[in-house]
Length: 102
Image (cartoon, rainbow, N blue to C red; front, side, top):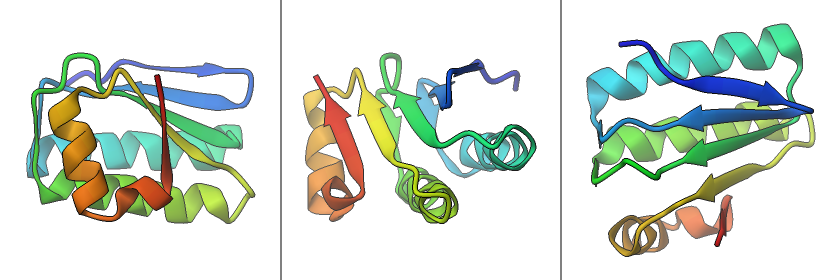
């Protein structure tokens, strides 16, 4: 799966897939980790515009990238997060580590 991503200033922007399961999370994890290390990005923006499903693998993906980026003083943001995903992020306690931008 070819993942859409871009580095803008010190932000790694990742376009999340329609369905984020174990397989998709694994691909994104590898790509994000390479870019965090190679390009020394400071923040990550997950774009959930097309995402309609996310399981616990997606939660794990966000937590893992938060742990890596916070070592450098960075932050994690979510954009285009629909109501269903917002409820999932809040219920899982993720709202304390990912800032949802409206």
